Structure formats: C-alpha cells, structure tokens
Image 1 (tube, rainbow, N blue to C red):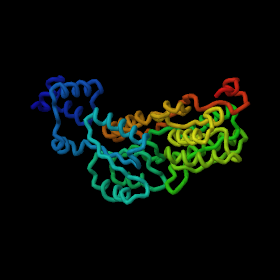
Image 2: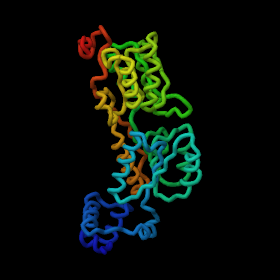
Image 3: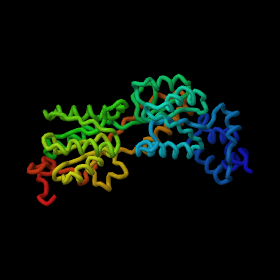
Length: 345
C-alpha cells in the first residue's frame, strides 16, 4: 500500500508539502496541490483519518446543518457542498434540523456541541432564532448558504432583486392585478419575507395595490392557496408571483383544473428555475443552488487554510428566463413585446 513518501516522490515534492496538500493545512499553490492529488490518485493512496487527525488536530470532516433534505433547493445545495468536499478529501456529516421539531433542538444543544468536525456550513438558518450565535459559540469556522448574520461568510441569492424582477416582468406585460403567493405561518422563512418585500416595493413604485396570499412553500401548498384565490372571480388576479417555483407550479395546476388557461387567462412567474420549471414551461428567475453549495464549501476550505481571511458576503443576481407561462392580460398590448395575447391561447 502506498504511503505519503510514495506520493511525495511521485509528485516531486517533500513529504511535508504532500501532507499539506492532502490535508488542506498550510499554504500550497493550486498547481502543486493538483499535482499531489493526481499522484495520490494514481497510487490509490488513502490517508488514515486517524493519522491525519493526530498530525493536524483536525477531523477532515465538515458539518452541514439544513432545515429540509427532501426539498429541491436544499438537496441541490447539499450536492454542491459534497462535490467540493469530496474533491478536496473531506468527509461530510449532515444534520437535518427541521423547524419546530425536537430533533432540531437536539441538533443544536447536543450533537453540534460534540465538535466532530473542522467547520460548519449552515443552510437556510433563520436569523431571528439566535442559531448563528450558538454555532459561532462552538469555536469553529462557520459559512452560511442563505443567511443574514454579519459574523459569517455567506453565499445567497439576492432575493429582493429576484422578486422585483419577477414583478417588473408582469408589469411590463401590462398586468395591474398581481398577487404574491407564498409565505406566512409559524415558520415563515426570511427568504420568503424578503421576496415579499421586493414584490411590495415594486408594486408601490408602479402605484399598484399589493396582494399577499399566504401559502405553505410547497407545490401542494401553492395549489391549495391558488385554487381558493382563483376560484373567487371577484378577487381573481390576472397574474401571480410565486415565492418559489414549487408554489408557482402549484398555482398553474390549480388554474388548469379551474379551466383557466395559462397564460391567456392567468400569467404565473416563479423564482428558482426548479428542475420541473421547463416541464411546466414556467417563466422564472434562475438561481443555481448547486453552485451556491460548491461556493460555500470552497469558502469553508479557504477559511480553514487561511483563518485570518476576511468574511465574504456573496449575493448572486438571478437571471430572468421567459417561457410560456406569462403573457399580456386579455386585450392589453404589452410594452415589452408590443402585442396582445394570441386569440387562440
């Protein structure tokens, strides 16, 4: 079985340099690190985690805390984190901390305190719960995906900008009765609240009345809330901004079951570019949760290599993707395209 000396010899570096490249401790140029990793792979070298821990005082393990595992956004973020960590030889310990559960309390009060990791990546934690302070009190580096805490590096979508752009798109098409669907309840996420603020600010700028319809942030939740909204012809909007694509897709399904054609009778826009968005031809604001996960893991590894590195606040701008779920309201020409809805739509 190949040892660290064999890897060093194959890469043309010293044992100390090979060790730093493989463990991620101390400075090694990217070119040298890649050469060492290639040599280790060609020799099928596997470092003993126990030996690495004794030599470096580190576990080569990163903890990841997120509120949901099954939802699309979080699973995509997790894949991105794992891809980066595996590429750099790190293990991952996942903590499923669903809001309002006893399990979440145990994660924060018991499991995280055992410090079986070198750093923590927190995904979608709420700033109002003081959970960031509890993580920072553990004394290890923390990076956030979707967060508002100024004490950690963070990578997140600019949610207010995304909601503004979604609403502006509908206004440019000529819509004036636009509802925001999603958010509310005992565990109303900060992301959804921020997106609502972006929608409301855009409606105010256009001198239009806002309308927020509460809905769980799921496809069934969006369906149920939209079915109730659209079933009442007196308050039915001509367009809906979904707080996320899952809510927006739920609204499209509800509209179709009520006999409302999308987009000739109702326009719908979402935020995310969910894997189902293309299937439903949903106009949406695209973000890349997989890339956010990768960037968060890279931030963490840099922080481990350079403990004095400055905090990074990376806010990403979503891109509008126009599909067939949005069009001008009936009989109204569009400023954006200069034509009304097709009579056969």
